[in-house]
Amino acid sequence: MGDFAVNTSTAGGQSQPCADALFSSALFTAVWADGGDAGIKGRHVNTTGTPVGPEFVVSDTSPGNNTNRQRPFVDSIGTDTFTAWVEQPFDLPPPAPHVVLRRLAGTQPVGPPVRVSTDSIDLTCPPTVTRMIDGGCLVTWTGGGEQQRIRAQRFGPGGQKAGAEIAVNTSPAFHTDATVTLLNDGDYVAAWTDGEAAGGGGLVYRVFGFDGTPRTGEVRPDVTGFGRLGRGVLTALDNGRFVVAHINATILSDLGVLQTTAVASVLDPAGDGEVIASAFAGSPKHFHRTSPALTALPGGRFVLGWVEESADTVDTVPTVMAQLCSDSQLEIGPKVQVSSGTAKDRFGLSAAAVFSSDIPQKVFLSWTAMTDDGDTSIRGSVLTADAGGLSF
Image (cartoon, rainbow, N blue to C red; front, top):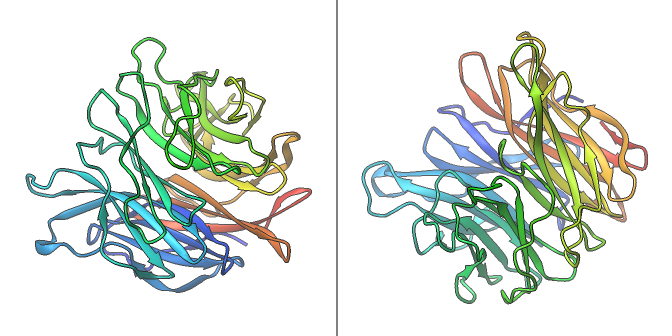
């Protein structure tokens, strides 16, 4: 089975997809930015790789159509979906750019969008969302100033703010790319790219309790280059550990292209930041890899996705790839080519997984595909994960 079109809107570029799983109905949810109306759209996909129903609108239409919405991120719990994004006016503010959250029940919005951030934000860094143990969610984002730049806000099951805004980082610097995931004990880990001038570009994280109480200070594991070549990603495993993925570089190829690979590093939130194990997309030699993606599966397993192309020739097609991994066995089975056909570019990869005792484990990858004339659309593919690896 090849990849398929997720979006049906074609007026304006469709880009920046994010995917998650609706476990209650064994569906995947994909959301993305619609360049045609500057809104956030969504669609459900089933585990056979078939879109279910029409596109649905996540965002509202603003008065005068003066609002540009970008960089959506989605997470689901039960039948509800929480989607966050950044928005700003096309004309001069007010309002200033800010982060917005909206709750959906199925495909239907529940109440109006809620403003999340209270101060300036960094528009280049998307927000992230994770489910919480009470049925609500937590949103993280990157602020606009140097002090207390990594921010978080918890929301209750109904989508209302719960508690005060949380200052996540303690070291002042222009940190970037805040991200978060719920751990299996109900705590959460927030991570970001270090912005300190000396040695910047590494991973920093902190663990917090449900109510925002810090469990740790800032931890700086030996994951150099995290976020330096595109955004790093984060997911939690069912055994209490968590995984971060980023792009690691070596040297230029003979053609002058940077040779890179995707690396997934396993960490223990109760540890001192030591990397327990690392899985790789392969040797960076001869390859330029970008756009890492992660999603967790049972038994300490996870899927690492990325986009790769040759670093040795200009006649190359960016290809979406995926590898089943675990924190104990590392790479399981062969790498799988996910995308089909040709494209000028593929980027913005996102991953989600559905699993239960009575259905096969399914993995949904979605990405932005660009044609030769610059048009962009959302493509997707569904894989099966079993003991031997990934397959269609």
